[in-house]
Image (cartoon, rainbow, N blue to C red; front, top):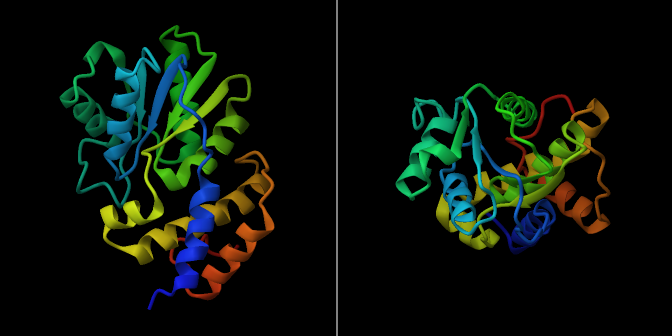
Length: 217
């Protein structure tokens, strides 16, 4: 049973995981591959709003996307963006990345190989992965400005879309754990975590929302 305290704690993590950046024009938009085609849709919308002249979609497949996206996450994202009216000439595809670090490193290499000057990146992710993606990009690409973006949704709206609140809570807990663990491993920049967020995270762990936690941490 999901309690009102579980919901309140999940909302604490949800709000913290988002960077609350205002989208602004950048050199390029990078859509990070996942199971969620909404990332491609947000990236396409930002392109049409003049926020970036060029898009990179990055991502191979994973156990959660292999069946739904057999041609690879980046390619399925590209196809969705084309359906939404983005010209093919404005899209680059990076089909090899299998984690967020590779998303950033491989996209950076692709853009350099194409001779694209990059001063700022509009980094488009799922809502609950904004902060981790931002921290990864700041670690691996420190010389560029990173602006985070995702679908403008509340936690309740996202749960309604996924139709599985336990899974969403598990993913929020997993994302929060990685913010704590990965800086020590050199994957992310360190970010201060407010005490209320730490308490909410610990309570959700104690309540059993642990399926996305890293083993042995």
